[in-house]
Length: 566
Image 1 (cartoon, rainbow, N blue to C red):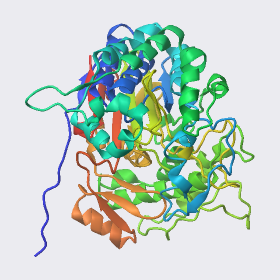
Image 2: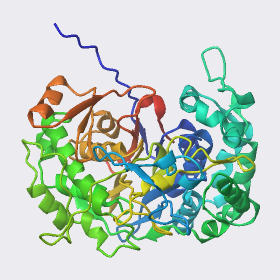
Image 3: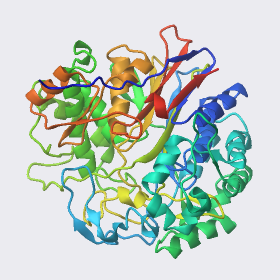
């Protein structure tokens, strides 16, 4: 007789408010966002305040040495408008398509090829030009209400007090202890006296990391904005730290960085208009799902999980193979996320049978006989998110990251900064859509969704945890829109993730749902959702309830996220 243990379920109560709500990857980010709302700020102010607090509270996930993607909906008498701030990493001016030696080809579409010495993942050569501060600055300049400096106050206070180590931070440090300990600059930030810091327990508070240097940096950013990091001593210190370990980011790269701010044209899903911050994979996934009756399939059922896996798998391989920086691409990249192309892809998907694996990639502009480029995909893990809604009808969603946990492991101790490893997000092989080029933005298939209904704010979601963010954000959107679930219930539905090959299934899914996927031809891999493991991403979401005035917020998993309201 086979054995089956009961599955862990970690959830929280859905938050409701008529004033404002914030959901994020950390309680300090939620508190900072709510503080901005309480002071008269709007959802964009809450996002900026929450992001900077996360830079202090989640040093493994985010920081001023990172980058992000922000989507927003601003209410107005004309029905409101969307805008997005793509502040992803840019390749340094000295970068080139052949700057790494490729040694291992990808196995199943989940990783770029490995490179010699892991140089695109760890060390100075892995550092791309960060955009976190310029991006948040531009979002605030576009739509913020409160003074910029006011929004950084919670983060500065946190840094001055020193971050109390929780089990989450302690585990992340322990997981990479040898690597951190071998790098004195990073150890100076994370390892007091060269050891793993003590975490909070029932017997007492956790040890506090000394973040005085980061507090000084944040005070400079509060006073001068991005100029505090792209010129003067801070910029010189960053460039020195990178060069000392073989990197190529220069002071000039930092000074020339510019985010992309766009009044993004919304797509349509059911009765919603929405944007994704230029993420074509998110657009294509929802565009495919638009052609299926998901409401007729129960949440978490084999029928529902199958369609989610097929839509994401097809969209992911198309994006990973053909997506490019729109500013540099020869092809009309936006068409990858367009409704006509999604309709063509949906027509080839069976509701009863998985497509042959690996899914064959295509693009709207391909003529018959056009040679397809090889499928590949990358990943980011060290990421967090902040989502907010206010009573005036504004919404905003942010994904912000330094790449892997603790980024490139390159630190600037005199500034308290840990730098990203975002060069891993480019294909290290020349001649491909996502190959490296100076100043280029890389492929980044993780949508930040902000949606409106009839010209009024409706829903927003973002996530963290690598490319399974796609699965979490899309599944939550489907739960709210198609299944009419509250945001917390939608976040809690067991998930499925596919990048066009194997199908990864949440272990909380019902046995008959997992069996149903196998019967449909999926190569199923069951993965646990438990503390210390993040197979299916963290998700934050907010929504406007049916009465038009009550705001709701949810977050999950419960042990590593937070949500709150005023």
